[in-house]
Image (tube, rainbow over all chains, first blue to last red; front, side):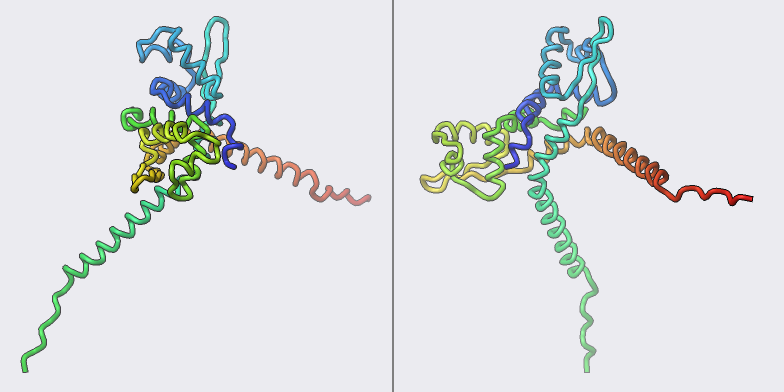
Length: 126
Length: 126
């Protein structure tokens, strides 16, 4: 079953279920940041930010590198690929919907093109 | 910011963070099921299954249709599309890695092709 191939998904989806943590990942997608840089836009204490970062670390989404007294956070995107792979199974549901919508619009176009087409010429009077 | 366009993501990712709920979605991807059908493979009480289904419903991932005394559950995949859309922003990280890997393998192929190529011909003795 699909589930057994994705042992990290509980932690990954849990980490993604919080808007602060998603915003932190978004910032890290633009490059490394220190813990205090990540805390700043949320007007958050270092302890509060650290708690969120620990959740991201334990889900394998962030690596914390210690350089002297500074903790630098780096995005680890591989586990996000696993999450996307899981979601890919459901893709057919929305692509089917889009295909249906496209067909519907095409049919409508064809119908309305018929309606505004040249009016049939009257047979010439004898 | 990306976050403001995805107000449902907290609930969706929270719903996906549990393996039982992911397995329920997987079963629903093959068609509608009653609550008791969804409960059976997990050896779970109806109350326990209902609790999970309520989480899926409140995330907009499942619709429960009541037909007489039977509750039929149906997958609602649109919110999964939102989750996938959110993840798409990070795609470049793993596709870049794959591109790097492909380049590395191609370079290695080229090097080893050179190594096993025809040995240089010795200059004819005078």
